[in-house]
Image (tube, rainbow, N blue to C red):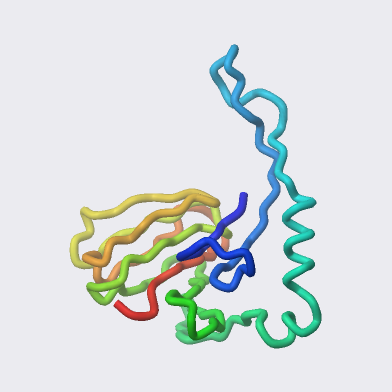
Length: 169
């Protein structure tokens, strides 16, 4: 699986975070009407060649984004990746065992993906009846109207949510 967060296609790859996951899932079998055919071609050679091209020493030293903790509690913490000024969005991660909170500020839609963990519930704290659950590698769009909301771990162990939001609303 590749999680790409971008605003405009770009040959130089200046505006996205590119995470590669190869889990060799099966493809669709028309006869059996199920996902039981040969494993999918993941084109990992192309992925790694593109990655090497972008990670020359100069690029790695000056442009590779690094996470910095921007919020910490004993229950969870949030880190944010460095970004170029021309990138209109922020990439953040929420790390937690039981739960974490975040806020759309009534103006930012959030795109979230569960990258570590089994299953989480995303629930509005103002209107708890508004919720959904996502599993590992699934994503969701959290509407700006959610305001303060929480991620609740519905599985065992540690969770990490990758979150993308606009810098300006």
